[in-house]
Image (cartoon, rainbow, N blue to C red; front, side):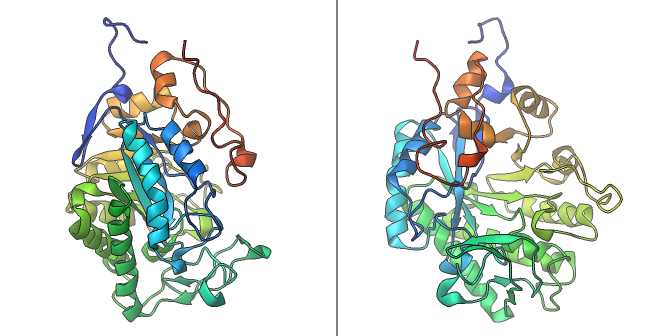
Length: 371
């Protein structure tokens, strides 16, 4: 532990986020782990998993589908049925019993799905009928993504309502708030980028129009559960799942400026998951996200991707972020906060168990010795 004469690392210091006082600035990032039932109902093993990690300043639980149409991954959770809501309750209670806080990430995957996963074998939906490269894991094996159906303008209020209802369900399930998933190539992200959105209505064309759905979802949820319980996640240099834009810097400067007006609990920004290559093709994308966009956002900012204890402290000390989210380190180190505080070594993670299996690679990572 740090002695009284040593300055406590800023990463381990308390901070206010929305309506909550966090014990530390170490955030558990949302991580899809696929330990639910085939009906997308959380299981008891998930209670153990989240309870083990309750010392985080805030847990952002894995993305939960806001409707049957929103599903893209087998055995991932939902938050649209009473059965799902009831199954989440022991999980949130376990975290609260450990004096932890937990938000739920809400998503609609859009075109990153397949008819074999969709209700009645229907086509996935998206901003436009543009296919993503890649494959979906389905009950019938790995299948290429299909060309989605473009949402009709009159269907969009229903999407917004699904997010709103999901936020109400999350609060009923005991979550302290929700994070809107606007990143990583899923539906809201598909509307943002001109590479996936070629609409000609009020949800396409200009940056203001392409960001309209994200803003309307944010507004609807903020009015429903209170803006102080809402976060938004964005990936300004995300190029996975064919997320291409002609001017991503200008796009996200506008989006982040707009989000500043909502007075939400936080904005969650992802640094690039991979080096942007080839250099010429992706030269319009930023290689360092958080320092650039900090000046466009007036509220609390979480940064994520690639940080360790040293770099996490530095990004906060430099004034670029207020909190740091950790993903893989939390997978393999349930007591990550305690390990940061004591300088203990970190467990390596096992990628083979990220998305499959039961307790192996999920709740069996060793904790620090009680001694």
